[in-house]
Length: 152
Image (cartoon, rainbow, N blue to C red; front, side, top):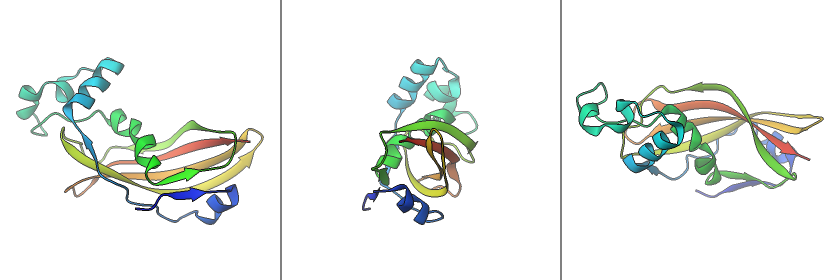
């Protein structure tokens, strides 16, 4: 996939509703899940105990939902860049859902659709809808709307 570069806010506005991607596959391995558990203090067995999780509802350990969310910057970096403003800041999320689990060792990839672009005193707020799919899955692992503040 070719990286899409937005050279202006008007270019982002022109792309509203256009899906970008999907991007390249990214493997979510047990080491990454364990590191996220250590970073957040969330060591629930469904994430960190492969033996117990093998007999659990998903047949394996699964990534934390917020780990999947935290991968969005890396997944998005392979889809597009915004080459305007002095900085781009994660302003938050409007909606976040986890329709399907990400089992340890699974591969995921994202697509992104800019859905809103509004300029205010602080800069421009770009809302992007991300869908993260799991290879071979029939439901996405993540559907989220994120808001990026592009500072002037």
